Amino acid sequence: MKRIVLAALLLLAVPARAEDLVSGISQDIIQITSNYTGTNIVVFGAIEQAQNPQGRNIVVVVRGPDEPMTVRRRDRIAGVWINNDAAKFEGLPAYYYLASTEPISRIAPPQVLARYGIGLQSLTPSAIGSHHDPEPFRQAVIRYHRRVGLYAESPGSIDFLSETLFRTRVPVPAGVTRGQYNVEVYLIRDGEVVSAQSTPLFVDATGLERRVFNSAHDSPLPYGLACVFMSMLLGWISYVLFRRPE
Amino acid sequence: MEIYLPVAEMSVNWLILIALGTGVGFLSGMFGVGGGFLMTPLLVFTGIPSTVAVATTLSHVTASSMSGALAQWRKRAIDFTMAGVMLVGGIGGTLFGVWLFALMRRQGQMDLIVALTYVLMLGSIGTIMLRESLAALKAYRSGATATRRPVNRGWIQALPLKMRFRQSRLYISVLPPIAIGFVVGTLSAIMGIGGGFIVVPAMIYVLRMPTKVVMGTSLVQIIAVTAITTVLQATNNYAVDIVLALLLVSGGVVGAQLGVRAGAKLRGEQLRLLLALLVLTVAAGLLWQLIVRPADLYSLSEAAP
Image 1 (cartoon, rainbow over the protein chains, first blue to last red):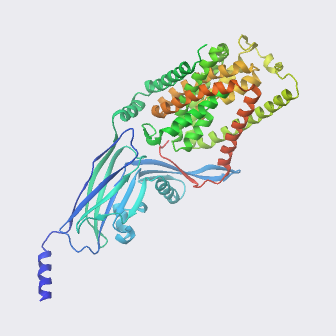
Image 2: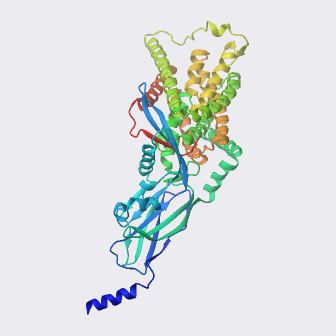
Image 3: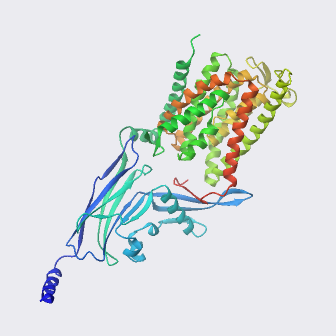
């Protein structure tokens, strides 16, 4: 009897569509204001046509805009540490955050992770300018960004609110670059990506901060003169305020 | 307590920056130097990108020098003729320095050259000042009247194009002041400093100006050089952060006023001894960083040259 029920259930399940994913983010724009000290966004989602939770994993990747980077290695020459060798990279993100249900090495084989750019070790530059093996330089990029909190991998940080409903909190630190970010959510079953969804996220300055940044770049001469004028004015004001009457 | 700096693109504690401005401003008012050689390394230490630190420190130097210069002007302790002649060389030096800056950046060795220049300049000037001020203090203690100004002889007197500098009570060629101005302008563009720690000793030991007018005159020269370099940094590198400048300047001008008062209570030799010790401390710290194995041999610069 049990076997018949199981078989019937299987028959019902087979014509049903495969597991799918819907996801969203708590805000699709991050405004940088004068008191911006970093924030969190919440990435949430639901699994549709959910099947056996065994062997199913969720990975959330937030990737910032690509930035050209130059890495230099110091060597000791004549007793002084000198920048001796350099490598230039393009196509590496300024920000990368990964949240997953399990450590990613247990979620999928390396070639799958590499194909989808999942995990810090899968970050590959699109262009390399180097005379030697670029790998230690690439590792230095990852090490540097991890140290300042701009790259992070956080396994086990996805909370399931129910069997199919999940969410995770993504920290966006103070040092982030302006530009377009991408929030990618992957549903991985038995080492294969079953479903994926991508949502853009914008980080931009507003109000005064934006105006200052724009004028520094668009009209640098008046901006520079304004800086000089402000400095001289404040110097003069302080002199007048502190002058002892004689 | 955090504030976002729009050009540096980062958040910092504004109280720390105001305190930093006040402290460095105090020293600059006391010694008649701009304080850039202290401010730039300190800002980099708080995590501000070095390009922004170099470019924005100049505003702080302009403001505290302005405040200090007005105080000196009131005491009639400025030789404007001398400052004007030095500025002729200063403008040329600044333009040359900006060109050199771009050249060094392409070679990828800017950090090293800046650090070595700092160590060499600060180390040699600090040592000379230390020896001189100790000798002067010793002479003062033993009862000799150390106020006698050494008479200038030798190659400087032999140069042509002589001019009278009334405030400094000097009759010398314009070439040494122009050359000093040029060197300082160049260093200002490369190192992000006003150059007071070079101008002040150069005025005392090369031009033999009286200590009384050295402070005010060097401040006027510094204001002009830093103002020009700020504009050049803003137009060439987009690296001047006006919010950071406002914070540093607000603290700096108050500190500078307090520093001028503290400086008036000390003898010239004592001031020079203290400045020498300060300069040597910074030089030793920078040398230490060059010699000690860095924690990470790899360093990253995000802006591709």
